[in-house]
Length: 330
Image (cartoon, rainbow, N blue to C red):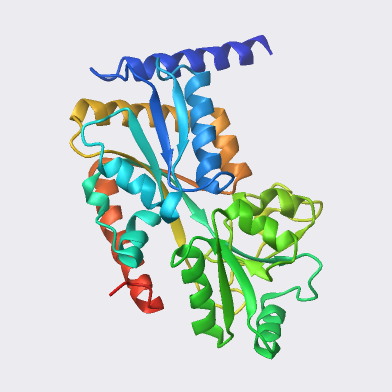
């Protein structure tokens, strides 16, 4: 036990020392982790985990705060970051919004206006219904939707974004028709499903985790070509890995969403290097690894050219999906 404690202490010391010694620059003012969403959603949860790890291991000498800027479906955060060139005390946790919102709302923003730091994880999405619903499989759910005299109600985060794109994908694959209701966050969509105000949502695992564990919602399938890897039981009977893919259930609709960090434009290479090193240390912390499993995220770490190449490819995938769904503003 003493040896294990000693090893953990050495690792923690190395984590703290590794960041401050790696860069010629470090923040001297309060650092904002900017979230382009409301409270309780997956981005908010991840930002607060990052804040906690950074502060626990003293990876920044300055205070760190989480700043929620989900107004105008997240446009508030994008324009806030765009309007802060050279300010390396702001770092945004970004997701597919960076591609989709400029297309659907025609806001004057492009992710290339900012400075990519790293990709930290991928989110998978799940089709959920209420646990008391009689439809226990994807096939049952689709058949019920086709037989319903009025479209079944889907809830999701925002409008003309990944949740609604997945719903449209289901419609095109199956011929079923749904009605989409936008909410401020995945947390709100989860609450609406538990209360039976909607019939389904496509929240990512973290957003429905607690209500799934409580037996209030049912996981029908995951929108990916492979199951979620984590095998530890989450509910009394199921692990994330027990949830079949939608493809296994005869519905080939797939989507993964990046979780990445961006600085404003016109920051210096030393400032980028500081955050690259710091977030790499965060990704090595046991709390981060535990969070990845608890939230069923796919951990990854990309920086530099690898990240930029990925962003270009992911931008095209999202643009094509937006056009296919008819969500691009004219």
